Image 1 (cartoon, rainbow, N blue to C red):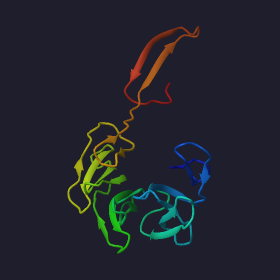
Image 2 (spheres, rainbow, N blue to C red; image 1 turned 90 degrees about the horizontal axis):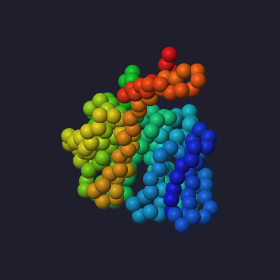
Image 3 (cartoon, helix red, strand yellow; image 1 turned 120 degrees about the vertical axis):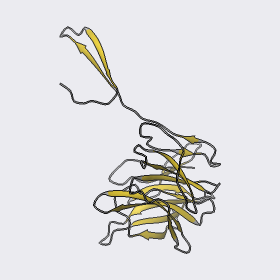
Image 4 (tube, rainbow, N blue to C red; image 1 turned 30 degrees about the horizontal axis):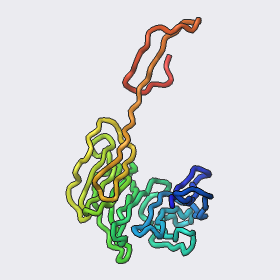
Length: 219
């Protein structure tokens, strides 16, 4: 099965469709953010925003048929309406978790949390942007960070240590997808340029001007 979140409404619904095709099943998950499959493929873990008088970012667990929905943990320290991305450890006992904080400016840090004991470990202390963690079977966690100025991929041991830069692009890399064995990564890199065409009123194209940045509007 393939899980996906669409773009209808303020929070997208969680839907399921067979990889062989067929109808789409809406799992009726309210206020959902990001989601991941469990290690055994039988359940879906997801983040939701409770919107109550005491707002929290909640970590939920649900069977892939939409039954047995369970609240695992509520993070009352993280800010709401943010990415709040996560990744489950290979053994399913812990998560790598992005906590969004603020001390006058908003930033995000990478944590791990044991879902059984509640023990947490903070892995980054940059007061920059950390995002999209992926817990690998080799004991490392890869994540996106702009700690070097632009958004690149970094890796850090799950037990803590010094982050190691994996990619060194000069422009922001918006996301990363990692193979299950941790050997391959798919990294899109987005840059923007502007091409200006000068023309007279007859519509005849004259010289082209290429800019190495995005410019709009212009005069």
